[in-house]
Amino acid sequence: MKVLVLGAGVIGVTSAWYLAQDGHEVTVVDRQPGAGLETSFANAGEVSPGYSAPWAAPGVPLKALRWMVSRHAPLILRPQADPAMLPWLVRMLMNCTASAYAVNKARMVRLAEYSRDCLRLLRAETGIAYDQRMLGTLQLFRDPAQVEAAAKDIAVLRDSGVTFELLDREGCLRAEPSLRGAADRIAGGLRLPDDETGDCHMFTAALAALAAARGVRFRFGLAARSLQVESGRVVGAVTAEGVARADAVVVALGSHSPALVRPLGLRLPVYPVKGYSLTLPISDDTRAPVSTVMDETYKVAITRLGDRIRVGGLAELAGFDLRLHAGRRATLLHSVEGLFAGGGDAARATFWCGLRPMTPDGTPVVGRSPVPGLWLNTGHGTLGWTMAAGSGRLLSDLMSGARPAIEAADLGIARYGRDRRVPAPALRPLRA
Image (cartoon, rainbow, N blue to C red; front, side, top):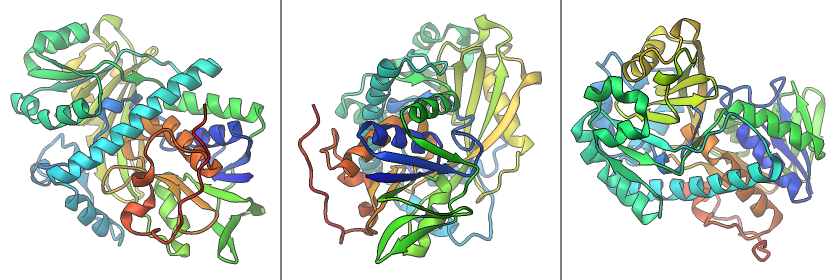
C-alpha cells in the first residue's frame, strides 16, 4: 500500500518507520527543512510512562485560579480571538473529575508502557543513539500535601503493574545525590525506575535517516495545503508541487492537524498548549542531575542529556503564538537553580518554545478516521516523545490489518462520538 505521512516530527517519523517495516511504500511530507524541527526539537527529554497523566485532574480548576496570581505559575491563559479555545477548555474541565482522571490516566499509561517497550526493541534492532539514559524519573514533592495527593496516581500505577518507589527525603537524595544542596525543599518523591530519558530531536533525525536508507521518501520544505478527496475517499494531499497521491494518508501534524481535517467535517479536539525549555551546558557534573527530576510544584522536568541539562515544561494557552516570554524563562531558571544550583551555565542557556498538541482528556488520537483513506496519529500533548514508538507501531498494525498488541479501541476519535459509522478493520492474527 502507498502511504503518505503528513508531518516529520517524532510521531510522523516513527509512523513512517513501522509502516515501512511492514512492507508499505511510504512518503513523508513536512514543511520544515528536516525532521523533528518543531515540537520535537527541544522538549523535556522524558520517556516517562509512569508519569503519563492528563492535565485534566481533580483540583486543577481551583489550582488554575491560584496560578493566575502566581509569579511562577505552571499554567497561564492568554485569551485569544480563537473560537477553538473555549470549547476545548470546557471539554477539559469536564474531564477534571476523579472518575475521568482514572480512566484517562489508565489508557495513557497503557500506551506509554507499550511505547517504551517498542522503543527498547527499536533501539536494540538499530543501535540508534540519542543521548539516552535508563535511570528513571523522580517526581519531586516540595510540599507534604503533594505527597498525599500522589495516592491517586499510585493507585493507577499499581493497577497498571507499573513499578514505583515512594521515597522520603533521604530516598530522594540517594536517587539524585546532587539534590543535597536543596534538601530542605524536599518533602518526598515518587520514583519511576523504568522510565528513560533522551534527546527527542536527535532520535527523530537519526530514525529518519535510517528510514530513508530503507526506502522511505522524505519531501522536506513542502507543506500539505489540503487533503485531496475523490468519491468520498482521501487519496492524497495538495501541495505547492501538485497532489501527492496515496492509498492512505496519515495526519501527524500535531497542533496543525485539526485545520487540515476540518474541511472534511471532522472536529478533531486538539489544541496547541505552548511549552518552554531551557538547555544549559553542564558546568559542574557533581551538581547536575543523573536522570530526570520532575519538579511537581512548577510542572517542570529537569533532565540530563549528555553534557547538557534540559529544563522543560509549563503550559500556556495562547493559540499559535510562538513568542518567547521572559517570565517563562525565569520560572524554568528558578526551578533548576533552586534544585541544582551551579550545575548548569545559565549564561549560555538556549531558550525555546513549542506547541504541544493536546486533547481535552490527555489521550492522543491514534487510528482510522470516519473518512475512508484517512488515518490519525496526533494529540499526544506533553507525551509525544514518551508515546511515539508505541503510537507508530500501533498505527501500522491497524493500517496493515494486524491485531494490535494493546487495546486500541479507546484511543481513536470514536471516543468523541465522531466515527461510530466506520466499521472496524478485519484483523489478521497477532504477529509473532
